[in-house]
Image (cartoon, rainbow over all chains, first blue to last red; front, top):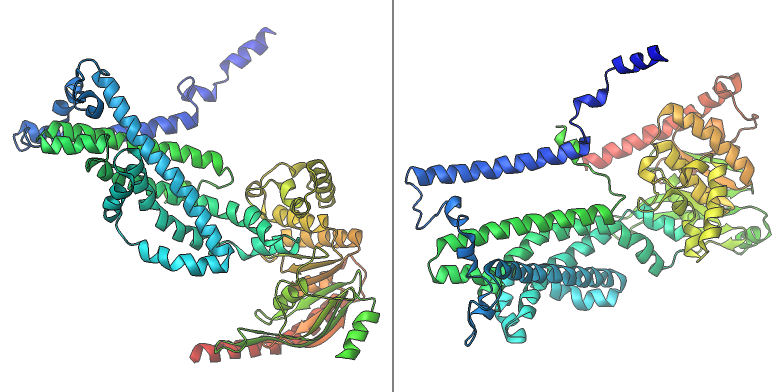
Length: 305
Length: 274
């Protein structure tokens, strides 16, 4: 008994080389996070040095320690639509931090609602175009014609139709994504493997079944990638929509910062937007992994090069 | 034509082809004739191998019999009925893996049943039985990307078997597999074929594969594909690829094919020179 116990004790445990409680996966995540910090740190460092040696004028390009130094001071300018109304005491409303949270929430909501509407609408229209020949003839030329129009051109239309508030901003996001995503849906449908379709045909599937059981699951992976690529587009458009007085939000804060010549507020808002864009991309990536469990992760091939 | 129809009607054969031809993109500049004047009868339970150079139209004939494409000449009957579209009676197995990656193995195998609206319990039972026949019952709940190429083709065979087809159409199903796996899969296919009692129509350009499998080998000419000769193989299975009879067959089939491959090459060079 005793010899056996010592025998076990002398065997080196391979797990000892890893820090306790860290799986390989967690270490990869940590490493990724670490590199993110280093990358941002490098950028911030260069900026701070430029300020230190006097090349970056703090009145025009305030370095991060300045615009992040006094967050409550910046936060005063958020959610002004409700707090600065006539007859309302600015001190009565939400605290500055709450105001930032409300603004972020409002803008994010517009992005995600717009994204969801655009995705559902464009996939539906794209599938209908391929499913019904007559629908394609009636609709596709118009969609192709409108797809190169910049979303900015739709801004007046948004205001004409929806006035101010959430609706025009969401409309802008939808318009910015819809046309590309319809065309992308169609091209994905055309690229579905003939074999998949022929398998379903030999098993007696109807046209409807072929679309619902084969074509739609087959195109989903690519469509989610398209959606992710368009996410940043949605963030850009929503700011434009908000900055032209369609309500409150991060875009409105930037516009106010411009009008009041407040570079600190501009950079603070830009930092917030960057963080939000990153977080929402991360969320969508998780969604993609959950929803598309069958798509293999091919990133390793590139990393191996 | 009427007499052909009468032949098809009175025939006990699984598949009857009379004067079948196929011209792709007919009536346009790019038109090219893939098949011409194919007369071929396949008996129930018979194993027929279509052998020919690449691009000779032998796969086209398979697609026509499957009903996935329409012939531009002649007629095809399957069990007395004219072929007018795809049918679960005639299952096609493709060269590349054609399993749906978003479904598990058993869901893939029972896909045809789910199309007909069968209940899950029934689908699982049928899938299990079909997978047992290909020796993959324990892989029921795996996903296709977790399987090797040979296993995936076995699942594809199980998926075809689950439809209880009377004719199995196989389009170079083992072409993407390595030589050892391919030999195993040929043995496996012969077992499945004997169990199922279905006719098999098997396309390949491998002479050894034809010798290992076929009751009859149908040798195709280069484009347009026509039947050059039909060679019955009466050797008992399992066949020794190195027996004198197999050697003689190999020599004969190689001779038959050589002139066609030469012709196909000359034609491709002429096309490239245009």
